[in-house]
Image 1 (cartoon, rainbow, N blue to C red):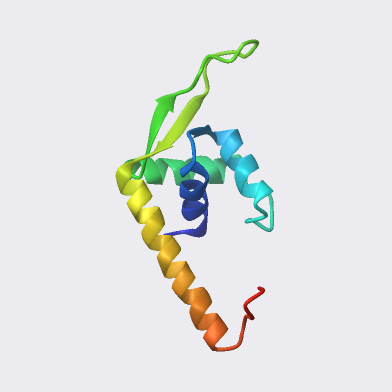
Image 2 (cartoon, helix red, strand yellow; image 1 turned 90 degrees about the vertical axis):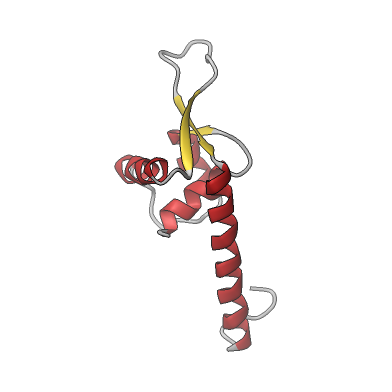
Length: 106
C-alpha cells in the first residue's frame, strides 16, 4: 500500500470527508513533508474506490456553497486493510526500536 493511500484511509477512519478535508487532515498530522497535490489525492482516491476500500457518498448540503461536495467513506474492507497496514507499520517500529534506531519516546 502506498503511503498516501494509507494516509487517506487513516483520515477516513473517524468520519466521512471531502477531498480538501482529507488534505487538511493529513497535513495537520504532519504526515507529509510537502503539501499534497490535489491531483495526487484524487488519483489515490480513485485507486481506493476501484479496490473497494473507499466509496464516494453525497455530502451534506452546506449553506452558501455551490453543488454538494463529494465525500468519501471507508468501507469495511478498507477498515480491515487500514488495520492490517497499521499493524505492519507498528511491527516495523518495534523492529527499529530493537535495532536501537528509535527509543521508546520517539
